[in-house]
Length: 269
Length: 293
Image 1 (cartoon, helix red, strand yellow):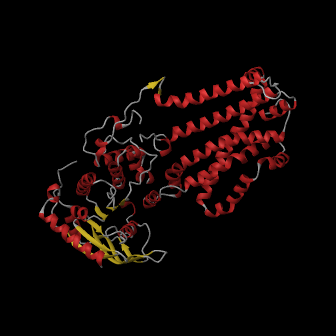
Image 2 (cartoon, rainbow over the protein chains, first blue to last red):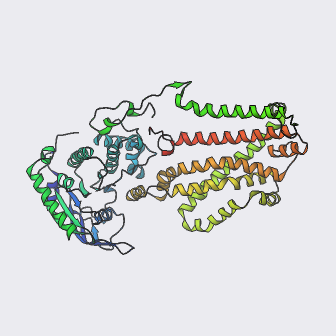
């Protein structure tokens, strides 16, 4: 993958404008069975930011992410998009599920083309853009492969390519690498960071792994369960690009300890 | 795994593609893998043994041919009466295929309608079930009276028997699309039609094909049963009538020859629908995949 990084960092663009991309205000979600999944969450997501939502299972991080995507609305509170001037992200949104969620009857190219097909983009153009995106996630030459012919990591790459093919402003990821082995996960983490750097989207990454969240993000929002709520909002100031060196640094260890502590508090509380 | 799949030429591009196992080629005889041959040969050997025993038993005990003809006599009759029998077979098969086509069209159309509207499903599905559970022999005489035209009534009878598996399987298939994929379609503002075309119909395909396999055989049974009930004579009659006619005349070898033709037709229909299913699903569906373990 390309290692020539852009000189201006996406985070700076976001912080200069001063206006968040997504503004979550006092959002609560109660399910029909009475469970309160999320309670009184206040959160701003800045343009170009890489934010992790870290928490134990049942803390409502996935529910929150799905509400930001527009899959299900809050029981109370508002989710606004001041940056887009709309109250929905619409086509400017990419979503990656915990499973690759590919169409098994379609090859990799057709899977990535799906969002373009749904928006009636002409076939030729859609194919070109999808092939370009596949190359960007490291799957050049696998256009005609069916999902069952691909490994778990490769399927996840296709899923990411599909989410990014519309060049969305924001990429929402719901524990995308949880089911992958350690080595594949590290590689995908690196490639995701590279993509984020190049494409300058806002990234929201739901995870229950402290290490993953510290490695990837500029900001970690720690959530607690029952009811789901925000416990802490940590800044990860380490510079990008991050690589294996960062993973073995004292700074990384320190940040992991900090995040772990907050997570323990969240579980204990 | 097919030879065109990239598994045979894995590039060293840093993806975890490199970890995938290469498929080892199996030796073949006459273009078929060695492990495939027992599946063909075993039933053939059993068949020859049983036919030989049958022929032997008939000759040894001097069973008269109007009680049980030997397989050789059945074969001879089949060749001698081929003209009449094949004309009748063609008539029966025509009804069968028309009924199957109607079952596919009505079954899929109703399944799509039902998944678009829960109300429609609630209102109409019980009647489809009633059609399915009522014995066709019992209502065939009514249908023959109502329809007037004999061919039309045969078609309706065969259709009633054949359409339910397609309907119920396709409904199941349309409802079994991955929930997250449905969410993904929602996120990208897909219309109802787009969700149907790009997601629900492809997801329903394996289920529909399983229904088609069952319905193919049922359409033939439906056609034969209806012919038995209708009992039409003359040159325009199907195989079932030939069986009735030959039975009355105690031409039992001819009964067996006609039965053989019906069985072979049923097997051919099953093989054809299985092949269709394999061709459509082999690239992606679990049911059509070969596994090493």
